[in-house]
Image (tube, rainbow, N blue to C red; front, side, top):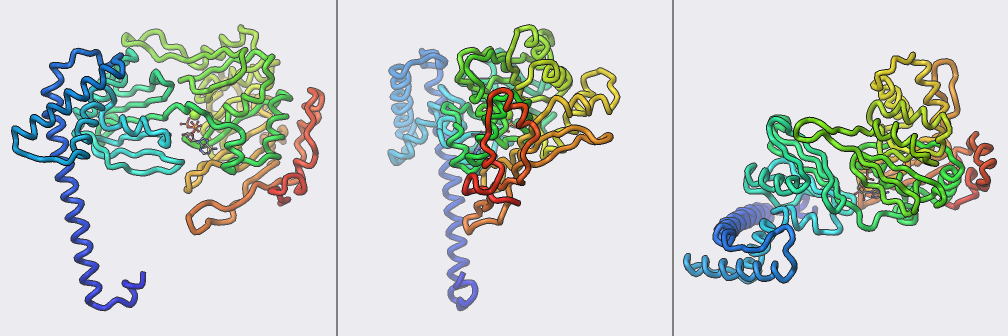
Length: 462
Ligand SMILES: Nc1ncnc2c1ncn2[C@@H]1O[C@H](COP(=O)(O)OP(=O)(O)OP(=O)(O)O)[C@@H](O)[C@H]1O
Ligand SMILES: [Mg+2]
């Protein structure tokens, strides 16, 4: 900045006084927040015993009555303490008390904000959100760990779940479909942690993803024909890279006359077809009984005469059952795996098969994988918050002990613009996938232009 480079001593002094003013502002702001919080707590403890409605099913009329009651109490408390507040501050206090009674305390506003897709609490005084794809710290805080534990209890008690020192982890789904994970001390060292992945009421469509630059139209043509032509697909990516969203879109390509069975830990997929059976695994109950694993569901689904099996994510021994299903007539199945490259996703699968308890020789495992998986779609989350398909890779077979693969599309990053957005384009490698013949038999034709640079103007040959 010009001041820093050419500024006189005087302007440096101005900088320091500016800085002091900022620090004072922050301190004042914190003091004000603390005062409002104390007032809110006092109001809450006064009204709480007089509330006759059940917070879980109160209608808007009843809520309005409680809101008025809180407003009056806040005014009364101010009068008793001979204090004044602006209307805005009073409303802030009333709001936070309402959120304590009817919502999930300080994270209620964040959960209600449609531009926020994820809420992450790392201990009482640190709440982060993902907003429009980017991570941000918010100014919201819990009072302390007790306040947080009280809110956690409010979140999970209606789901019939509990968390305490003897079972300090919970993974559950809220009534609105949002996924919640809770982990508390002693496992979490910094205090309790809450992670909520909000359910997308209006999930992204293929057109949205193309508009975001996640993939281009030619790639979508290839993927559509691959799904319809019953190619087995593995979507690979890191945490929050958009695997489930992508799986949802791939599933939308399945013809509506096919019987689809979806299997997930927490049902997130939102298929539009009619003929869909949604299965959801179940954790053990309080006595440690009744657990139903993804693997149990995969085994069961084979008896349900499915045309397609869609598994939300493979994490463990179910990988073996899935590969066997893919190899024995349930082709056209799709799943996701947590991995950073297509090669990595294959080694993850190998490890998972080993976790199945079946003592298979390494070569046999590799052969199963090579013949079951046809296509790997690798997705990544970039620093600018965007998600991109970085590779579409075909599994071609085995050479000696190695599974062979070839890239069909890759994302070529060409730097960043001044706003920090990733620049780059999807390019074809010019390789035409070997499975083209297979899907042709299924009546799916992909124009060859998809694989060469002249197809989509966005494509370029490597
Ligand atoms: N292509 C995309 N572009 C931008 N945002 C996306 C895209 N795909 C998904 N998202 C957003 O990223 C977040 C994570 O998406 P999603 O649940 O699909 O990821 P995931 O890889 O399945 O995560 P996890 O590893 O936790 O299962 C969601 O909030 C979603 O709205
Ligand atoms: Mg997911």
